[in-house]
Image (cartoon, one colour):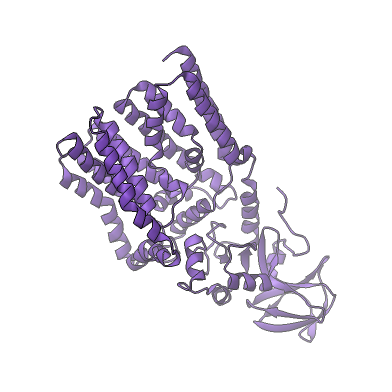
Length: 513
């Protein structure tokens, strides 16, 4: 590698390290990160995923992260801490990318493949987040590296089985390996690889162990419902799925034609991986119901390898332009690396003061991490789509009342209409969160939806007057229904523990970073 290229490579790597350090502490928390951490917390709290609380992902990632989470007490910056294990998974993917590219091409291509992957904006940002996809991709890349290194089929099958226990999307990866392998054998006239039984045995171990466990704790039916039935119901809410499936025969035929067109390829592994990229991409586009950038994470290391191989045949200035474009795009999509993590930390600060361990809260997807929810489903896209189409019933209001839940996440458009109207009418803004209560009307009337202990407060604290015809002298148990207060105007009725813990609708907290 010429000196000028070494300098560019080292500079790219150095800038990437600096930007990753900045992003680690400053890049905003995705809602999925909060959900996955809440699911991992459920295991530490003695609950069983699916049976006791909702999740529509395979369980291995949360099971592995739960012991790490258990090392720490309840703290508002827990999401920052739990991004640290994800750095290890990032390192595994970068190493595997380098190792595969070195064996398929050479050291120079391998070095640039690792550097370009680390700087590619979608991979850079998603590989930072606390999400299942990062363990999934790490296991996938280890399996591919193992194939090139000549590892035993049983070990490779074990890695792929673990990947399946992290994400059901592994079925697409297995299909990709099978079809790409078949086309490679047919068009390059290669003998089929042996050890199919060993692959299958290795693959079965992790899913089988997990299946036995969930059956033993009475959670198998819930696991099947959450990961298969619930996700599959999304098809009933999407009218245009037939378009991708109708186009698939043509896109797949294009992949087969391209594989035939380049059947004279001498580099068998490069040919195999190129075909695999095509098969996965067209299958995902044709049959997957909800596609996002993270679904393409398994392809990004392979694409980086081929991009590096192409750039190796060009002038160095072309590589420099690509690096600059990646940096510019990353700067934009990372919001110029402004600090956007404080909003969640301040919300967690308030959550840990406003609610105590063992008390229920109602949030969207588990954003408050350490608290159980009365409404079973997480209000993510698939849930909201099924609620809107009547497949699921919005029982959030009834669940909040039944469980006497007095703390809720702030208002926003992701709440279902009925639930949103209930929370807006019966909860008061505390800053980042809400507590049960109401503003008292001019005639002194108010309604309690969630029975519990309440206080009457004004701007200066508790007020005096007559509550339901008797002198009000402090916190009182109020039943559901209509009540009346005669006293200071403009007062509010508020869940008493919220007031004792330092919160009031007259003095909102944690609104500024």
